[in-house]
Image 1 (cartoon, chains in turn brown, red):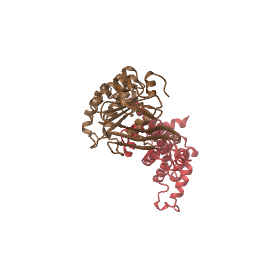
Image 2 (tube, one colour; image 1 turned 90 degrees about the horizontal axis):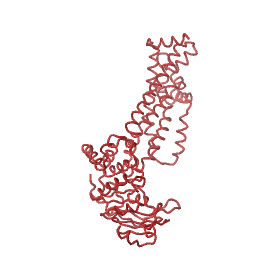
Image 3 (tube, helix red, strand yellow; image 1 turned 30 degrees about the vertical axis):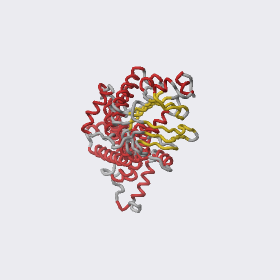
Image 4 (cartoon, chains in turn red, yellow; image 1 turned 90 degrees about the vertical axis):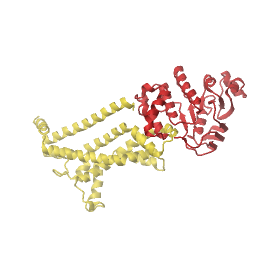
Length: 240
Length: 231
């Protein structure tokens, strides 16, 4: 079931987020358009996760506005989110995907086939009947991706999906992300792994302490950062 | 111990009095648990998923009511149903129906309070994922109830254990009438004071056996289900 409207471009206008006295996001304005993956980079605590949640609509900003395709109250019909530590439903692997399909409005008669296709696309076909909670970290992350793709998203947000994974599992997840991007899904992904930025990013958002410091093409960001913080971050210095 | 032997004989020979009492006890306690479940699960889920002023106070009261003394519940229901009470016109005092009502009241806080805790714990875990999948209020409740079904079964079991083992409420509102409102627990109390120890012991054995059997069944279901869905 495709929603009639598009959620792109996604626009943030002077978005701030506060929790009590603590500022988490500080007057962020940006526009995300269709195209190659956008990676949000920056040190821990820069506000990457919060920015993703605001972009998804999971968190309402304290000030400023978010709009999806020009609409401010858009339900996340064509947006999906993969959390850093995804929670598996207490069901089988296949049932987790079937649940996401049902929520996305996929007709019952098509579900079994779609479950098979989606599990195949994340290389989990052999584990369909296993309890989802018995999977390894990498497998759980792939299942979370299958669940997210079940929503047939136009925009897919990923919050450091490979932060806790070994290199083999990281490669598996990146391949799925690259395939999704190739299929026309706009990827917006937080990462603090510069290698990953090199491998995946078309565009980079660089954040420090709740502020957006740079929004630029990935190559330009990596070769010629325009702020001293970004240059320090790229050198591997500790940026606070 | 001759009484012990006689008790076994009563059970093995399928003594009619003994089994009539067992049947009535089971019917009353299971009906009470069923009613308390129908009211208690949605109540627990609603408390787990909503925020309103006074919620914490309500949860504390509900948790406290898990330990309601059965005789006090019996007394309250007795006053409600007695001829001069507000519900006296129903004429159900000293009937099995009154016992069901009283036991349901006794079990309701247990089921509602434990269900609230179980569902709220799972909700904390699921909240972000369900929000990201745009699951509506009804879908959330259904998902949480379904995914915590095994834990909730244990909650119902706790309720049944309480209902089947208590003697205070059924004694007061049922009246322990022979062949009509006499349950296992009231019969044991009566027969013991009369000195008919074989019947009392026979009923005691059956009561414990039933509770063990039901617990074992739920345990088996739990193990089987964990293997299947990793709950």
